[in-house]
Amino acid sequence: VQLVESGGGLVQPGGSLRLSCSASSNIFFFNDMGWYRKAPGKERELVGTINVGGVTKYADSVKGRFTISRDGAKNTIYLQMNNLKFEDTAVYYCSARVLSRTNWGQGILVTVSS
Image (cartoon, rainbow, N blue to C red):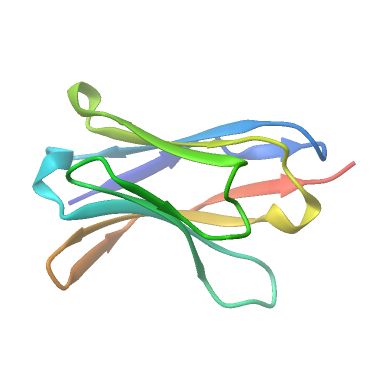
């Protein structure tokens, strides 16, 4: 399985970005897909997930600001990020889990800076 992220970049505080993660296989094959991030000097943390049934979960730090969605026809999930803060700066990784096996994308950098 290949996961390819896109859409990262530089954004000012309060701005928005949408990340995309395109999978090389049918996304409904996975138990869940999601987004993680790793900030400089910190461990990788969960941002949010979407399961095969479409139920989403989010870290408290992004609730109300970030939204995960998907397009089955394109085998793609999205992370809409609004009201970005300095502390959202990180490399964002797409994940896709089947039972105990998790596949990862290569990561994409999001920088929030004025």
